[in-house]
Picture 1 (cartoon, one colour):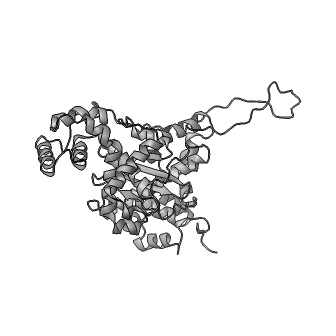
Picture 2 (cartoon, rainbow, N blue to C red):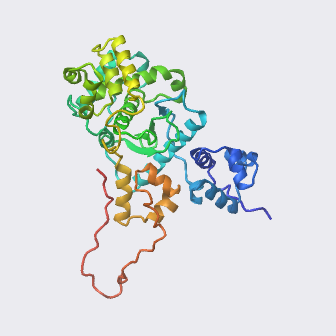
Picture 3 (cartoon, rainbow, N blue to C red):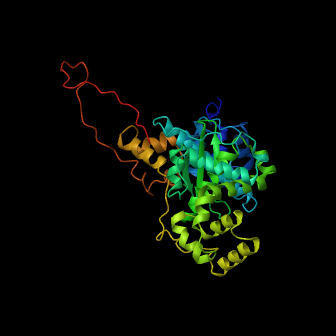
Length: 403
């Protein structure tokens, strides 16, 4: 008699994704399961599949539901996942972070089976793969076109997180475990939607504002860029995203007209209004030739002397609250409140990753899913065809729409 196997439904890519999202090696996972690293490798290559009993152990070890390993992997395409920093991040941190982006996309795709997300409003400001020909003057023009299309005027952008979600991006938050990665952005072919995963490790409103602007810049400029191109042209791609993010947040006419003092305190007085750090304003003033090379370097040196390179005034969340993404959180809350799916259904049957991971990535309150085992009482109702007339017509349930 042959041994029972999960080979008929086991999706090897899900094992790779879950292991990488946990930041562990095949050997590490093998030790937890009492198996060799080569056995884990065979599972991930699809040459073997775990037995049903082992599948449960595997799920517990990776803190996912067993059904996760039967979930079909969507085609996200070859679009690169952009990092704000690559050289300073270890390969393991980058690998883990990419897998966490896939989990963010997975949560979103599950929720979109029930809800309609905002329309995607990312026009083609730049032809695909035309980034190699762009100059700084082109980036200034594109920044103006972005503001014009999204009707932002020339003033400060008070809440860029809300802007990103309103134009169709899905945002999530994660504990990266490294300050070398600030954020990640990517396009997914599965729903044609842009995704941004923000690091919680550097938790200030001004860092978040720039991180989102930086990832929007990647999504606008570098759509269609694959991993090979990113590796080859990383310095150019990063320069363009940094420049466009600053130009988008600090339009040259309006920002220049408000610079009244070329000092640290002068820029600090503008910080709360423009929602941009003093360091970023110094660099923008340098771009616009308001500050010379020497003057900009001098100010950055003074900034470091004051300790502002580690933390600037107004950075504490108690001084300036940090805006959190809302779309995924409200989507989960709507599905639960409308009793379309229970919390337990979402965690154990639909999304199938750890409850704490969903809470973090979707910006839900910590412990939101703690009551997934609670039994909700249902009111009794008459059977249809029981001979009793119905007092009210049946109202069809329409899918909620998230705006």
